[in-house]
Length: 100
Image (cartoon, rainbow, N blue to C red; front, side, top):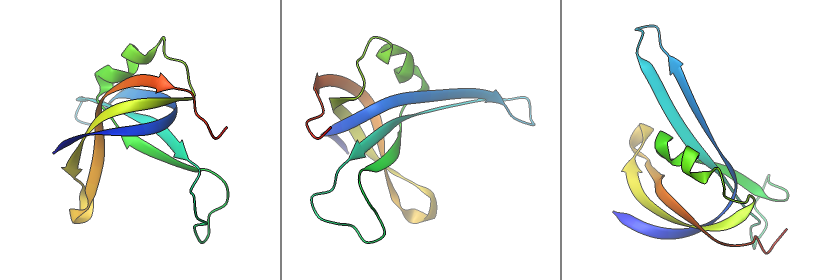
């Protein structure tokens, strides 16, 4: 199920490595953050989250200004342990982060 989500993003990161089977393994993620409206027990200040995205997305962000507010096209995927995960498919910068 695809949906559009506004996210405050600090940046993006990608990796490419060779595993023990000599296969190339690639991955990437966006670093999102927010300041919760209500206190969260055991947390103080801003909350950061790694959100997976395609490896090919990171090079397209080379001219994007970070931090910033981005409109993200995302889909829900199945994750480990039967949990749900958000996977970002594309991003478009829409503004500045208001809470910084």
